[in-house]
Structures are given as structure tokens and as C-alpha cells.
Length: 280
Length: 256
Image (tube, rainbow over all chains, first blue to last red; front, side):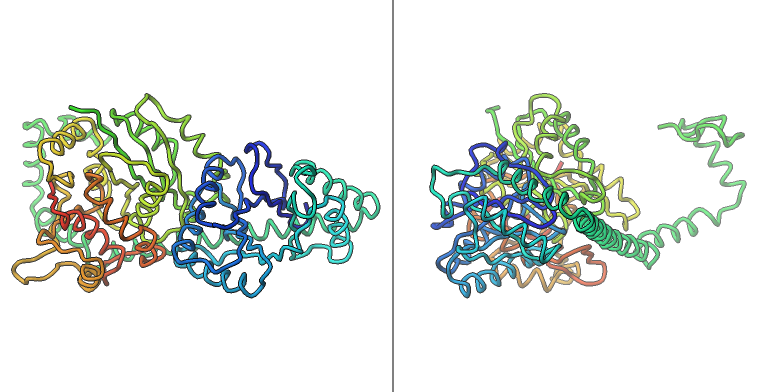
């Protein structure tokens, strides 16, 4: 997909239910009581073959303990990161509550070493439940905004009832058909949007690699500085110079012969450099 | 000897995951759960360099295992914070949340210490604690004396306390004094295992981490490449405290 879509569900009957596509993401909806729901959520995360985020439905502030519990999900291998930043959807009716909880979560997560998370504040009314309505909105977004910074959200049971479940695969197929429609109608625009999105992603990837590489170079530079400073390596070098290097050549050669007699060194290495010198 | 359960807590910065799993499953001959933490933002592990898909990695590593001793792999991924101590705290948090209990725990990491001249020798010394002969000695030591809380390679046991100056030796003194009070870790035994690789009786530290959640401690640790060559750090202080909190419960240390 050109723009981001989040498929939000309380459960997936099996990990194989997760449709895979560029910019098409899955969130596991966790409703109050949050702490209890998180225990069940972790079971799904351990089985998920695709990255997945948490969508937290909030109607009251989170306790410190729950903030810690939520943050522990970020260490799971299947947790969704975009551009090396963890992603969380906060869902509810009260925008100011969601905003305050976003600050609290972000602060804790950064204290654990994560980069500032993408925390999407999603009011319940902004979540689509009907495929046609989402597709319509997505098409408008593509035509008017092109590449948009705003994600769209779909919850299979929002507005519709339990009998109208939409799988992530069928939703993705409908969205892809919408993009194909744009490609047919306006091939130049579609091609430019696709190319721009792909260049943005390449640029983001190179930026991430540069940051990681620079960090490692900094580490290596630190190590070299320590080794060169008044430290073990220097102490060992000085010890070698004092205790061995200053001895006369004839004394060192006598030592080589002694090593051969003791079985520590090979006889041939007294005369040649291209043979094994020391016995293991 | 009665059947025992064991958890290995292994923190990885330098990659080579399948090799490590093969090494552990090929070397350790008692049933164990492997808690494996990957530093996701190291150049050796970052997906932009490795092309690895993290959600699929646990299954891939399970398939790499040889023999029957490896029971389960619990995988985690973390930013580089608190060095190996930070990683081991993530894994302790995982063990608590997954409710996996074991009689004994082994703490390990893929140590390199490139700024130390004898880096490889030190690493070899520390890793001998999972060789079969050492494992048997460790289990026998725990079985023989119920007060043994830690078993480690003898030549990696250092003492932080200098009786001649009546104070701590390293640069980490201020951090140690603060955390001793904050966490009520009172012991007269100031030995520790340099390199933080040792066997521990799980009951000796599990109570502490129920009271003080591992992630709460991890919050205090430094980000990135932490060294205490010039100044003390919280991370290096916890290298000592991980042993001291066990001694504070009345347990002792045995070296081989």
C-alpha cells in the first residue's frame, strides 16, 4: 500500500489470518481491564509470524504497573517497529485522556532505551468498520493528499456486527484493487506516488544504517583510545621491553634452544620462519 | 542426583544466533530453557544489515538446536541499554512474565571486551562454566550445600572491597553505595563474578526481582557503550550487585 492502514482486531483465530503487505499493519486490540487482557495478548504475540502492534482501548488513566506491563511488549520479537520506532495505537472517546497516556507511555518506553514511539491517538469514531467506507476514504486520500502522513484504521466489528466479519486478507485485497483502479485511471500519478514512497523508504533505511554504523564506529574508537592509553596494553608492552627486549641476542638464542629441549618449541623453527614454531 | 531444571539467560550483541544455539544445545547435557536476548540496534543484529525477520527467528533457532536438552527458546529483543546487565534484566522480566520456573539459572553473554588485551582468554575462562565437567561440579555443589547461591569460574571471582582502605576499589563506589541503600542489599561479602557469567540458585534471587521488577532497575542503566575506565556507572555497579543481592539473602559463592 502507498499509505498506512491498521487492521485492528481483538483476536485472530490463527496467526495465519494475518495478511501481509507493505504499509498494511496489524494491531491487537486490548480492552479494559487492560492488565488481564495483556496476559492473553502476549500469548498471541509469541505465535505471530508478522510484526504486530498493541491497540489499547482506554477509558481511564493507566497505572504505573500497567505502563510497565505494556512496555514489556516492546521486547517481544514480533512487536511492530516502523523506522526503528515502536508503534502503539491508543483508542477511545476522550482525546485528552489518550494524549496524557501517550505522554506517560512514551516517557517510560524511552527510559527503556527505545526511540520515541509512534503513538497514534485514534478516536473510536475515526475507525472504519465497513470495507466500502474505508476503501472510499483511502481513494480520496490518495487523490487529494497523495502520500499521506495520516494512517487509516479498520476494526472488523466497528459499526458492523459480529456477522459481518471482514478478514484482513479481504480488506487488503479491496484496498489493492482501489490502488489498481487509480493505476488504471491515472497511471502517471500512481507511478509517481509509488516511486516516491519507495524512495522515501530507501532513504529511511540508509539513514537507519548510517546511525547504527556511526554508533559502532564510535564504540570502536573508544576501544582503541582505551588500548592506547595508559592501560593494560601499554603496561604489557613496557613489561616486555624491560624484562625481555633489553636482553642480549646470545641470551635470547640460548632461551630458544632451551625451549626446544623442554619440548615447547619445534627444532626446525630455530632455522626457518615458515614452519610451526610452538607446540600446542 | 534428582532431575533438575535449568534456565540459561544469554544476552547477544554480536550476532551468530544459530551458532550460539548449536553451541548451547550441543554442550549442555541437562534439560534447559534458553532465554535469549538480542540487541536489536547493534550493527551485528539490526534487520537492515542482517535481513532477518524477528517474528520468525525463534522457530528458526529452535530448528538449529541439536540434541534433546534444549526444551524451549524464549526470545527477546532490546535496545542497547545497560550492556549485558540490561539484557539479562529483560530476560529475567521474560521469565517472570512467562512464569517459567527453574531450579538453577546461568547468566551468560557473548563477551568480547575489545578494549581488553586478553579479551579471548577471559571469554574462554568464563564460558567453561557450561562445559559438562563444570556443570556437574556446579550441580553437586548446589546439592551438597543448600547455602550455595552462586557457582562460578574461580579465576573470575574478584573482591570489590579493599580492607586496607576500607572502601570499594572500583570507580563505581558512589553508585554502589546509593543502590545498597535504595535496594536494601546488605552483605559483608563483597566478592563478585567479573564478567557476570555464573550459575545461581534461582530461589536466591527470584524474591528480590518480585519486589523490584527487573525493568524498573533497567530504567536506571546507561544507554549505549558503557565503560567504567574513567568514571563509575550504574551498569557496572549492578554487575556487582547481582551477586551481592544473593549474598544478602544468606547465600554464598563457590568457585571452581
